[in-house]
Image (cartoon, rainbow, N blue to C red; front, side, top):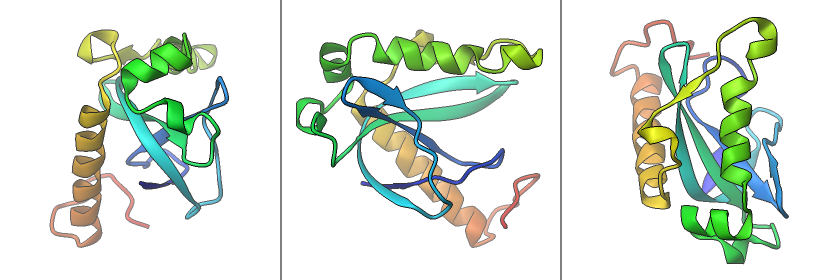
Length: 141
């Protein structure tokens, strides 16, 4: 799977990748394509809006062959999903904003669920780009 990163408030999807026992969110230039294997999804609620977080591993990572789903993440990267969730829960607190919340019982959804999120998000993006649905406040530039 290829993932791209669009930096900014109007992003449709962010991908977090696991790298050799470290959890990182790689910021690349707009349009950069990174080949990843999706592993899980987190349903973050940011100021009342759903903001999906996809946990993935780069296909170039030496640990990529070890993980194929959310259970493998817990086995080979113990504590990584908790660290990701905790960071996204708390990262706005220093700015005086409340902690973010998570749906799905505060649990990470499995790979199949993550793939559905990616597919639905991509379909919504395609409709916006084709202008077949109203953009609302979302910038199409």
